[in-house]
Image (tube, rainbow, N blue to C red; front, side, top):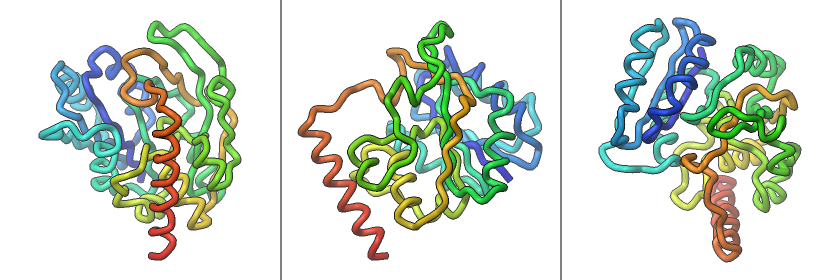
Length: 237
């Protein structure tokens, strides 16, 4: 069983294409869990209209107050029942072979999978055929190299129930959930696999909820120290 976990916030301009690209790849035995972070536009109404037309099991959870992307994804993961969990942002578009390609890697023994994506702007114009090239990502990383620069992007990440259970609950001081999921998987020696093939359009524009603000060097240092503290705590459990 597959669980797709999505966080949304004021995504009426993009959510339709993204959700339609996802649900057609899921079966009636799969589920999609969407946590909306108190949107003030028609995002939730659009979601419910699309999901009503498809047999996939779904939950739409609306936060009573704004939790941000980390808190919203944590809520979604807590609700997820699947053996395999795919993360999704609200404004990308999955390629038709994304789920099948990732599932092949899971069947080969992977427990956390990350793939590449084609970078486009808000109008669909290609910026770079590879997000890993565009963002200078290293997808073969140690714990320390990942702390310096995270090469694992949540919108392109999927993992097993074992990873989810090891990573929850999210520590309050982590910078982003995707880096934490990688770090815990690496610490627990779970098998991590990177797919070089782009499996989605990754939209970069000024309205993205995640990844738009470059942090100061002092903030980055504090973030890295907090991550080390969190990992030390997990390692003692």
